[in-house]
Length: 117
Image (cartoon, rainbow, N blue to C red):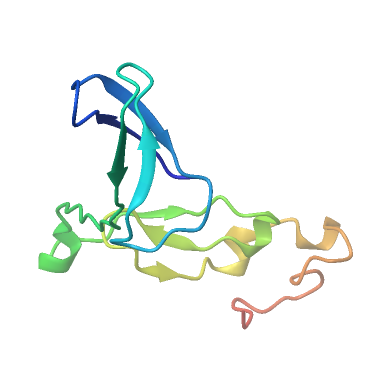
């Protein structure tokens, strides 16, 4: 439900618009200012914003890999906190107790260093 605070075009009081229905960008909708009891129209637009951050690993520095928080834990990967690149975690590091895992552990009883995911 899109909600916004706007100023009434008549009395300049701050009012809240709650638009609960589907909407069409640029379409005009009616609203009533409860402060001055006048009706006015509004339209909505969709906005996309970008944020930027440094990614030194894309400029020759090492990646900053961190283990993802995943359930089950044996499905975790390593993800770079700067650029988002991912790589698998070696099975012996990911699941050192794989023989004691539950039945749904994909690495249970697997002695290989890497397992296809």
